[in-house]
Length: 183
Image 1 (cartoon, rainbow, N blue to C red):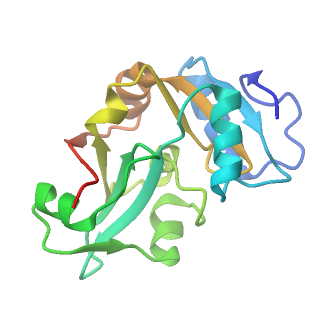
Image 2 (cartoon, one colour; image 1 turned 120 degrees about the vertical axis):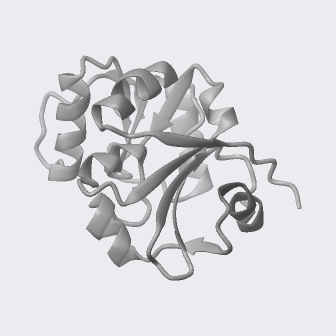
């Protein structure tokens, strides 16, 4: 894996999902770096550790959640090394019970597949059905790492660009939570 600046010069073999991400970021004038890992999608901790090392950033956990009735949906962004406790988040959001949302809802609202969940998927949520929730520790970092809606590449850009340019361009608010990951 190597570190490259911006979108790939050759988009051959890239999905529409990924191309839309690069077009969106470029249209906002966001400076970003990319590493590709097409032979090893980042679904294992080993690959994630390699990606983190190349980008010099910690890729976040991006969890797509829903309430028991599957009527309210949440995208939680939290540090990758922090343990996720459903009860802790449920309490802070005032939701009685959260669980992982199914693949069908993920594809319907975010146009994403499992393993590729990313904040950039919110550009596909035209109905704004998904509530964005960000752990305070993520916002405290200078750099933010995520997928371009495909887990065969990873990106790095400034957290200030996420909150100051990307989310406003999407017309998105977010809820800040403080997760400890401790029972």
